[in-house]
Amino acid sequence: MSWLGILLVGFAVTDLTHSVRRAKVLPQVVGVLVVLVLGVLADLTSGRDLVALGVVALVVLAWGFAVTWGFGHPAQAAAWLPLGVFLTALLAAIACSGLAPDAAGPLGRWLDSVTLPALTGTSADRFLLLLGAFGVQLSTGNVLVRLVLKSTGTINPRKDGGMPPTQLKGGRLLGPLERVFILALALAGQVTAASLVVAAKGLLRFPELSSRHEQQTVHEMTEYFLLGSFVSWLVALGSYVVLV
Image 1: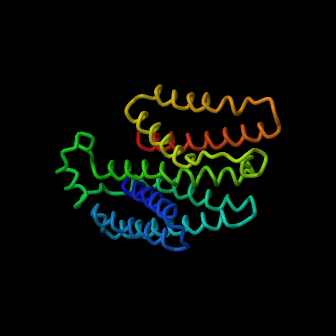
Image 2: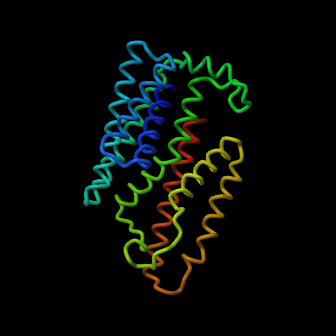
Image 3: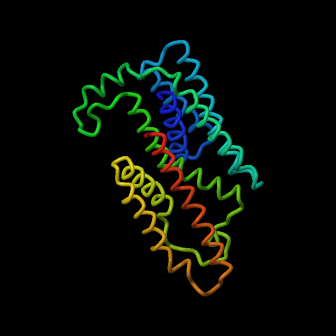
């Protein structure tokens, strides 16, 4: 599972870098460098590992450029290219996970020396998966949500002029926090508590989505909210499935 963990970390670092500094090449370069450094730290230096790391690096590059192109191209169907890159790479990494050797090296020795209860007894493979899974919740989850919304032509009525602009600016932060919270609760065995988070979000948005005025706009907002929320929750729950 070491290759899969490093792939997820590469996706996460690329998207996080792009969210901090919007540049054409820098996010991909940072993502590739992190992939290679993690490979060395995990002692993945055999011939087969080097080939796998090379493929992962190329996939991370392809992901970064595909996302930039998908959002920049006006065509609705352009979003399917990065979505296809992500899903294909993820499924291929899962299928090949049995071929990946156990990670060790400096990363394994560091984990053995760590006294934090949460990391005690954690293998390097497990650590890479956790790091990648939680990293994906931060920025990659937002990217996937936006790609699905674009691919389906689901608009945000506020941005399209159908509803008054809002002063609330925390949506892109609330999504990652929500996904991290759901994933952490699920890993802790509190799946019921995670479902309460989902229910609470629906209740908080109910007044806005049940307005009797401008019904067409309300329907558009409901579709936008439901599709975005379900994709966001799927990212968190999909990561949980990978981890268990």
